[in-house]
Image 1 (cartoon, rainbow, N blue to C red):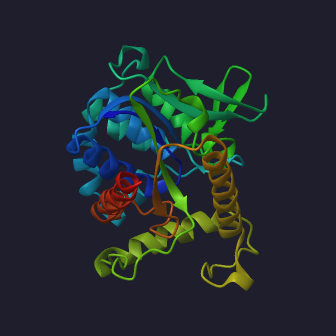
Image 2: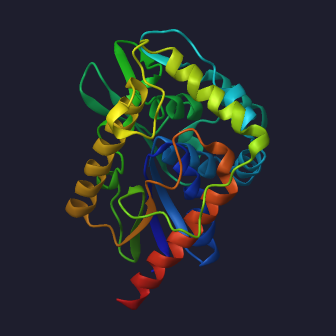
Image 3: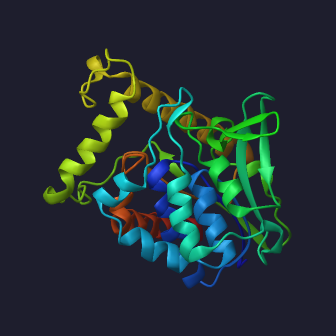
Length: 292
């Protein structure tokens, strides 16, 4: 069974692990017949279906902490503090926008409609419009307005949309869960670059400065979590539970688990490390799958 229906979950910068999973799947001779993605899973999956995953990976690997900071177009909007237009404009320069319906491999990006309380599935239209809607983490990115709909991150309703794929005979469903409640190995310490650490801390301070002044900046002390950290951690926890439920109910053939502690939501400067984590997670899951 070498045909795969691939489901890529949400989880901020941890979504870079999807790149490693896709590369290893193809090395093992699997043919990806369809991709359904949510948030960063939609970004990686959509760019792969457009045929530009190698270019996207190369771009990510070159990002420094300062680059990440410069790509965040901050706004004082009450609906979110990042517009998200700048990063997609940068990506469009080397990828170009594409119409989803023209992809050889069927692709679906999942977003959530706040006003109509339902999922939105992008299977046609502008790729970048679909991706911008799918990544709009509530209170972080401003929602996408589409007519009378306000669209936010698909992870609000379906962080691992396994229910959207149907396998044919001779196919398997592979789901990549980047919110797994497993420890991040001691052999994988975060890569620190002291020359750029100040820039990253400055970014976090800027984010917190846009929130009420009673915000406490100590993000590592549970008793004193600030508003930004409470919102971020609460959203992560909700996604964790929804993801576990989707796996239990829909039972994909192979689940690739990446620790929720692998990196923070904005730590895109750790691309090499997180992509490699995706490779290792795939081979661990695949080894277990073959032994059954």
